[in-house]
Image (cartoon, rainbow, N blue to C red; front, top):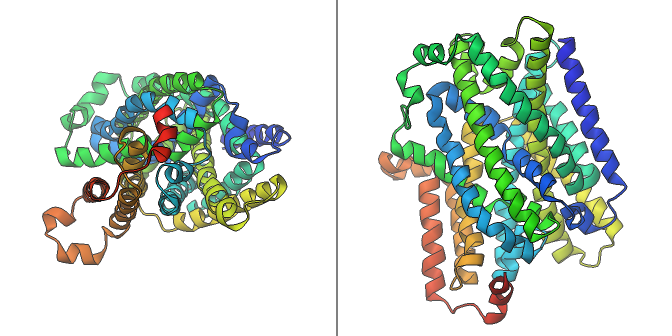
Length: 482
């Protein structure tokens, strides 16, 4: 355990050092919120990759792969499809160059769209942050079972994340992600063939598991695969954290180049994560990890590399890489909604003339408060996969349609956008209630919220927009030029 403790300590100290080195360069709101719009493509690739691949993939996706095999890639595949479309959105987003998604919503629609956008983002992003705390707590408990409970581990991770995020904002988050992304990518790529060899080769892995583990749909129905695919795709298309990275880019060309690297990195890493979990289900088909399959990757790091010192070190590095990715993702998803409360509420309605010093102080306070809210949510999570799909659906149904409409549908109106955001959020939040299950047929109420929420959101956007007056040329001008 000393080896694992040393690796985690080195990672924590490294991340803290990176944050502190960026602190002296944060002087203005733009420095804190969008890193002074100075991030080159290389940094953007890794911060995009690190913000996207966190506990949703490392815990939720791995749990799905442990149970169902490669059909779990339907969840990752939604992100890949979204990335292909993002390639064309990135330069437009960078040219618009605001601070948050609600900035964009008010410029294209109205203030009501901005406020509703903030509400939807707060629901989604703190939910995502909360299950990063779960993942980090699980890892600490696995390494130190007699010292740290899973719940106590959540408190420790929350403290790390809040401190790291509050120190230097976007610059801190982005440059930490470079180190974390490199560590995770190389460690997982090296670990996979070694674990497959330990399992007796790929043919042995294949023969030890059900045939459905290696089929396109596996043991899922197509509608279930679609319920994994759509939330991920829609979240990625409208992801505020992603747009903030584009707003932080040095240029439109850097934003576009970063997407290419992001696509390649995401396809490789998510496929490797699923392959690791499938191999883990062959190596460890029973025992404690069978009861808690979301821990399979961390369990592999702890028990899959016994033997020589280099192998034990690789296991410790794999555990450390997962730990670091979880912290990185939590940093990104905690930082983003704090910028909404500062930029879209505090500076917009409460204190528009706030100095840079006061703005930075309020920004850091928001990080702390939202971090505590996310910690509270983490203490009540039973399934990371279910929580991740809930968070993705809120965003994908409520915000992605109106965000895409800002760039690609000139006829979308403010009234249509407001109706779409409000209804999409409402349906998602209240879908799994007793009222829905008791008043709708089981064939409908048992479906994931993404299908009904997306459907009513799109219907409201289209119908209300067509029934109201079209936007003015003044509203459309910034987006036409983009």
